[in-house]
Amino acid sequence: MSSFVTFKEHAREDIARAFEWYDSLKSGLGDRFLTELNRAINQIGRNPNLFQVRRKNIRLGLLRLFPYLIVYEIEGNQIIIYKVIHAHRHPAKRFSSKK
Image (cartoon, rainbow, N blue to C red; front, top):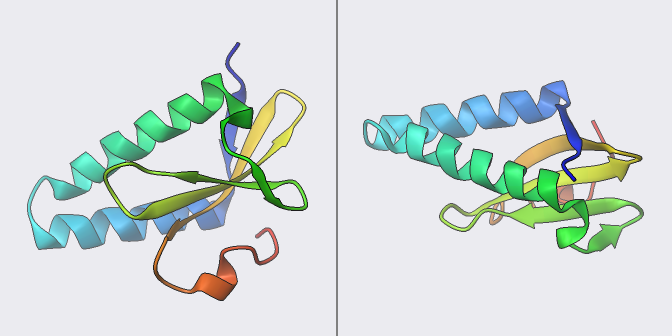
């Protein structure tokens, strides 16, 4: 059973920045990033418990082809995506408060 996925504004901003950065490296790479992100989000939507709880109720989903983490929480049948962050940048912020 699929869950309903919502994005916080900060996650939307993270995605836009990552897309722009990858697309500036090579035309079409931003689209490949979005495709991989969509695949990972669909996977989480089908199986929200796929990734273990890391802190409180926060889970970190990892993209396969890009070094990004999806920071999310399950609330009932809803998945709330708080951030989409680079796995090698700002390690202290990985588990910071939900924004």
